[in-house]
View 1 (cartoon, rainbow, N blue to C red):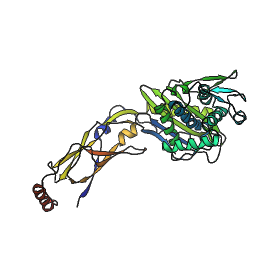
View 2 (cartoon, one colour):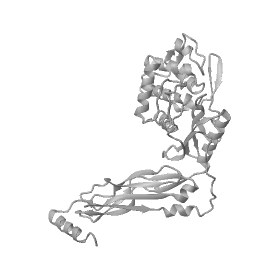
View 3 (cartoon, rainbow, N blue to C red):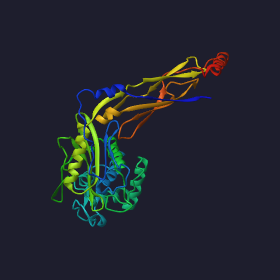
Length: 380
């Protein structure tokens, strides 16, 4: 019988870092009902508060409408210069507006700006009807895209985010969506940094009032209804580090501005980057049965860098598990175990451990001798 061997390993070198000149931070919290802060490159979650709780996303929903629109541009189905007609349905749509005139046409590029800057519900309807024939058909597309990108706790009932009890998301899903917009459509992301938009001789200003702040915010979207409260999701790049942050369920614009600013500052000031493992770093050696080598190294397949606050540096642990002995043949990069990185007050990170080299199987006679040795001496 192959026995299961389980070990724990503590990163002493990281624990020692706290002994040199760092002061404890007060535990960070937010007034937001739900909030999330992630490191863009690694996907590491730096702050979590009710990340899977259902929220009404309000106009943050427009990110999904923009994703579908950007995808249509990327596939050359439409172009930025194409013009979409303003229907009666769009003209009469309640809420925020770009003041589109009934019977006129608006270019796709202006509609993008109208959605991002003015948060125009009418602009969303124009896009929905032009791409799918009706808003109901477009909603089917929104939910299809959401399912494809793994937004498992989201459901869209309209293109604009107007309140509907069945139109909901989570801060986790919206963060995934924001990251996908930046990753998938870098050529269109710059529209999110526009600070004003003029249409029909009316100039409106971006509700994202911390754009181009000293914390590097360059997008994405605000949201508000009486049921959702005030929310905002932003992306920020500073000192070669990009963060995505979201807060939801706040009571005022000032509170929203304050909380998202605090969250970003916490991300930039409260964390330091550390290399935890190098690519193909050997973690341990595992005994091999019937192999031409008696042991095979188990390795971390890729470099692991983490942003850690002081509690994270102080309490970081790594546990790993593997079967022992393994049965030859073993192929290099074969998954033979699992590593778990435990960060205080955060979700653990699970990664596979792989064989660092090939181990070929011995011939029948040698294998018989090794098997005999194993059964005779395995308990010594």
